[in-house]
Image (cartoon, rainbow, N blue to C red):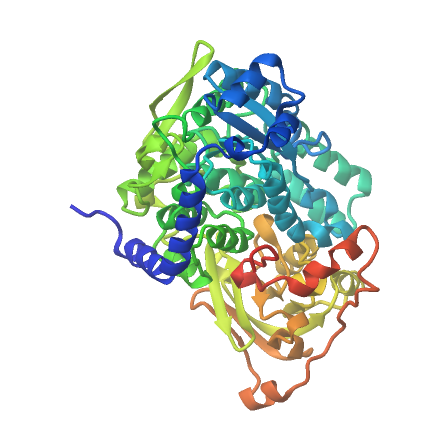
Length: 607
């Protein structure tokens, strides 16, 4: 009996139909590359000698003989970012585990890793989105030496995992296993951190109090514990079958984390074309895997950044995913988790309550995930309902819980927090955008108010501090899209908007920029396309226009006659290349000129 939800099947079939030609071309290409066998076998003697010059005698002999798989390690390690600090010791451990599994491994290359949390409100944030495609290209460079039979990808945060996956898909004939580092242990409760931020924004506490609160929250090695893009990345890699089951949210430095890392090396060694279980990543990431990722994101209220990243990842595999697909899925996927900023719990509480294994099991029971997919752990998504346990120095998987340990954090699909998922698309005369609804109270799902238009977030904050934003309003922040200034995160706005809402005003935000995984209680219509810098309608809005944001009906409307609105000139300030300079930004000017729109993944690579 077919138990798949009809909407899930319809969306998947529609994606497959529109992607048929591009997907077939992609699969033909990676099949041709895979059929030729280990690429190093076609290298000239001087080339391969360069490739193993620094290797030990035994490894040199194995690489010459083509009988052992050679695993590329690609890492986003740096010791400034908490999420990537644990990767410092991974290469040595992975190499030893690969040897134990009958292969060899080489550290193929590193990719850049920047943190939106550090660059918020700074010029460096304007490089953030572009870093994803730089990371994709860096991954491709690491794999370009044709020495490898599979890859181990070490990455966690925001643009890093999507970039590494896009890069891996450009070598789609190679198997790839993503190796997580896990979240830091819980620190200051998220509600207390948010309160400190708001008190600081109101001028009621000083910088030292705020810094103490932030430092007590972000306090050690591992991923930040709120449910932003980094932890959404981990969820996606697991549900799409690219992590080992149950491995995403195990804390760093624990025996289980170390055992799972070794097991990832064992598993990838068995997936190469030199064995009997060849599993190229380009075949594994298919239409069903992409849809499974969308569903998991929606069911947990994950990061809005993935409305761009999933589109870009799919395109790298020859698959066309649209915001309409995500919105249609969101209408039938229940919201099963309350993780900050959509609740008070963090990802450690989510994991302890049953975590991703529980979510996958419940969604499978509801017919809202495709079970018949391939994964790095083998055929079938049901494997990912299991929970890893230590077995000596190794790992064994046992059936996971089917009962939530805390129904204030995690619920089954049949008893969800909401019948709809956490994301929705809005459309109207201003354009097309997305909104994260999972943290928005029901009384704020529809907002009508006069527009207050700004071309820079500093101008909005100055108006707020001057007391010029009292009353209902729809803040319009434009020229924040990819072509304007690289589409920086706009989290500096969140405390001020939250204060206005708490004062009883009807408040919303419309922007062609990003608010990302930490989007909170204020309704924010983000990623608006066409963006202002490309002449989009948002550049025609003026102060006082009445705007209605309706996340119930999925509309974004402006109360201006159509003829009058269309006749208006585009207004506002656009950065020139001369102004968009310093802090490395001038090096990225070409990407601003060539980047695609947000709803097509904001891609520079493969546009």
